[in-house]
Each structure stands twice: as C-alpha cells, then as structure tokens.
Image (cartoon, rainbow, N blue to C red; front, top):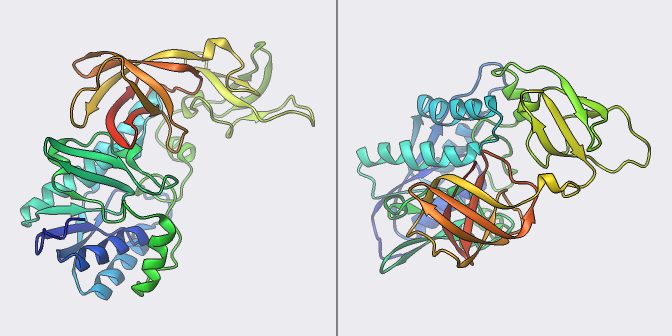
Length: 359
C-alpha cells in the first residue's frame, strides 16, 4: 500500500474473517482513517442464520481496533444482482459465477456507492489480489499467494473501480496473514476461513437451487448411451462435475465419473471416466460475451493465459476477434471443461487483463 495516502478515509468490508481483520490493521498502520462496515445481505429463511455470528465477529474486530462500525443493509441489491441472476442462469442450463456478480454488484458496486455518501476516498476488502497504479492507468494483478489468488473473481472491475479500491493483504501469503493476526492479537485470529456461496454461507448449491427451480430426476448415460444411473435434475450440473448423481450400474473397479455433457430438453447427463474421452466434448475455440477489458483491449494473436475455473491451471490462448462486448478465444490445447455461463478470465503473466462469460 502507498503510505503517502495519509488520513484518507477508508471504509473496509469486515466479514468477520481473518483476511479483512488483518487488512483493517494494515490500513491503520499505514495512516488511513479506517471505518469498519459489515455488509448484510439476503439469506433465505429456511437455512440456518449465519450472518449474525459473522457480524458479531466483525464488531469485535472493530472494537479491538477502536474504529467505527456500521451494518450496511444491502439485501435488495444482493437478492437482485446475485441470487436472482444465479437462479435465472441455472434455469436455462447455464452455470454462473455468483461470486463474480457479488463482487460486481455488491462489494464494489453498492458498497462503494454508499461509502461515497459517507465521504470515503477508498473502500477496502480482504481479497487476495493487487492493484498497480501505472502512468497510463491501473492494473489488476494476481495475489502473491497463488493458492489464495482471487483475481479470477474480479475480472469485471474497471478503471474507475480500481482507483478507489485497496487490497491490503494481496501482497502477502496466507500463512503470513495468520501470523499477523496473532501478532496483532486479533480476537478472530484462529477463526477458520469461510466456505460457501459468497455471503450465503455453508449450503450446498444444488440444495439451494432446488428451492427455487422446479427439477425432476433424470437418467445418467455413459458415452455408449447406456443408462447407468440417475440424477436430481440436469439443470443443477456443470461440465466436469463428479458429485451429485448416482451410478447404479457399477463395478468395484470403476473409476470416478465426470459430467461431460448435459441435455436440458431430455433432462439427461452423459458421464465418462475421463473428461477428455469424447472428442465431441473438447474444443479449441470458444465465444465470450459480456467481456470486460480492465485497461485496454487485448492484442489479437498475442499469446495470453487463461482459466475458466477458480484455481484451475492456466493454459495458453489467443484472442482472435473482438466485437463490442464479445470475443472469440482460441486455445493451444483442446479444452474439455468449458461451461456456458462460467467466466473465462485472461492473464498476461501476473496481470489480469479481463475476461468474459462463456457462451
């Protein structure tokens, strides 16, 4: 962080976790005027309430640091921008990234709009990513900890976002963040990392969706079109998934099965022991829509790297065409887990240059 920004007003999203808590301390030590905010989002009334416990932890952190604390109600924004979007996408057979939309609509959208009304110069979060201010604009970089890097979920950010965002722990490995939490005697130093659907909490996505999307059980087939099992609804599955369906015709020597295709009309899944077993499920080219290029459009024909899933190994690709918000991407090696609705995020080494939604 740039310590020259002394006394600038920063509102930090305190989730109750260690990353945002350590971020708040680092901002304090860098001389910022820090204010804590817990973002309250929509949760269905049929799941165990988790936000109150998270808010309590966030309040303890703010009290420990001697900073102000606000609970910001963004239920409507979260329900519309994240949950409704997710349900609509699954309903037509696509697999969205709700965490990408949560960042776009809530954390760096509605939160910033509110913070501006409070006189904020910046907002901050505990994301593992970095922002570099160059003479010709801002760059979004991977976090130092490759295992925790969250730049994949931030590809929708634009220049106007990056100039008022701070990621204090982005340049640190996670073990160091844990050590700092202990060193600073933070009350949540030993708290485990949260898991689950963005803010929603610990809930299986299929279980969540089945409350809002009408599904029915269907057949699971192998590549020879032989019925070998059942599933609770083809809409609920994504390419490459290996859990949630039941194989009824199996032997003790069977390897795990992966979803290699799905037919929404027939409500069927096709599975294989190998993701790349079928030539019909691999491709060297894909179209993207709703593209966002963080600084400038990527050079056509230049070799970049990309991933279509969080923590997936990066693979080489080129951008062969760009048209308004769309782009065509060509891969050096065949890809077999590309799923409509997912984000394909593109990198130039350490720099996240943007991405788009797989058509």
